[in-house]
Structures are given as C-alpha cells and as structure tokens.
Length: 127
Image (cartoon, rainbow, N blue to C red):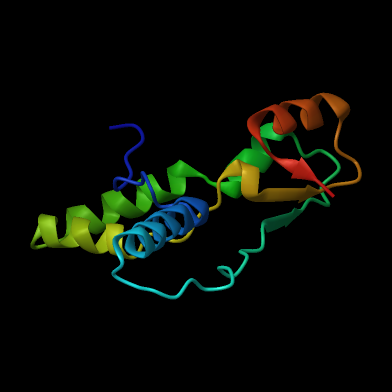
C-alpha cells in the first residue's frame, strides 16, 4: 500500500465529541440518567500559526494531518511486530487526536488569496 493508516473514521476530536453527545442525549431520553448537565465543555479549535511566507494550502493541510507520517509509523510497527493484530489494535488505540478541517483556525498573514479560498472551501477558517 502506498498510504496505509489504522482505521481512522470517528477519530477526530469533533466526531468523538458528537458520539459522546449522542449517547448522552439517548441516555437522557431513555431515563438512564435524569439530570441534564448545563452543557458539555467546549473544545477549543486547533490553531495553526503559519509564519512561512511560501506556505500553500497543501502544506497547511499536511500540517493538520499528514497520512504519510502515519503510514510510515504503521509499516515500521507492523513489520517489527510478533503479533500483528495486537500491534494494529495498539496503533488504533494510540492514534493521536486529529481535528477536522472545520475545527482548525489558520493564523497566517502572508497567505495568498487563492490558498485562503481553497482552505476556506475545505472548511478551515481564519482569525
């Protein structure tokens, strides 16, 4: 495989929060819990400070999430493992939190307008 990662669906900070909120609401509706909390704690967006004047939308996307780093780590881990299944499960368990693009604020003064437009279309937002 050119790019391989542990299964990452549902591994973003926002998707985990949504999952917890759904379970919480269902538990309230089913009467499993009776007291509604005032609100869940807000999760701060990831803030990327871009100081490189030659930064592009591609470099910013890869800074947010670079699957090639995950691929290399997975290949090294699995090739050295005695029990591949256990090693793969551990990779999934230890998967670092990643943010969805809509939860990433880009702070970049010198970014070209064309790059800003592409990033905004992908869901990134700017301070």
